[in-house]
Structure formats: structure tokens, C-alpha cells
Length: 158
Image 1 (cartoon, rainbow, N blue to C red):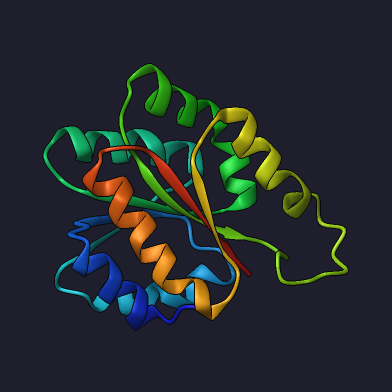
Image 2 (image 1 turned 60 degrees about the vertical axis):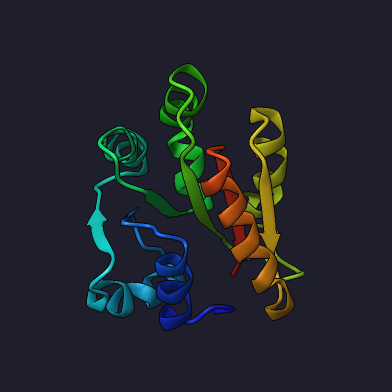
């Protein structure tokens, strides 16, 4: 994993994130211990990714600063909820998506193939984090989305 659990907790705390709404995948799941241990973040698990968007929307409307975390296939599954929250309700939800098999050059995984084209079709701004050198850009991208109240997605290579 490019970013450790302690690093992500530090980044999210610095950015003022109050809640992490997620379904952990095999890579993002490595952050669970650090996220649970943080006194500054509340970790909320959902049963499916489509539930995460309206839950985050409620937290945002209630004055909190949530962030979603899910895997690419979960992003695809939750497309209708994303559409409703981000476009119909115009709520600036920020998300970290574990980009499955992104680092495997030989992967034929369609989740890898479809991630960017789907985000482009949805007209969702995104930042790719594929190397350790990209970590500062990820933090700045998240900061920009949160401070400018605009939706955005980080595709975190796995």
C-alpha cells in the first residue's frame, strides 16, 4: 500500500475530516486499525457502497466533514447514489477509491480498465495516486476539494 494507516489518519485529521464512511477492500482495509484508533475520526461501515453516499450527504448537511472510501467496483455499484448526491443535490462529497490492480501492468481486470472512463463520463474531477511521489498531490487535491466545496475522487493505485 502506498500510504500507511497512520499516514492517512494524519492527512485526514489535518484536513479536518470528521467521519470516514466506507467498505474496506483488501488494500484500504489495512487502514482500519489506525482509523479506529483515531480520536479525531469516526469510522462508519456500510453494507454496500450505494448506502455510503446518502449517509455522507446527511453528515455533510449536518455540519460534519465526511470522506468516503471504497474500491473501484463499489464506485461502479454506487453510481446512481453518486449521481443523486453529487449532481441532483449538488453536495461536494470527497472520496478515496482503491483502484484495484492499477499497479499490475498485466492485469486484464475491467475495474482497472473502466475506472477513468467512467469518472470522465460522470464528469467527476479526480486525482490519480500511483507512486509515493504522488502523496503530496493527493493531500493538496483533497484539501482543494474540501476547502472549495467541490466533489472529487482520489484513485489510489493498488
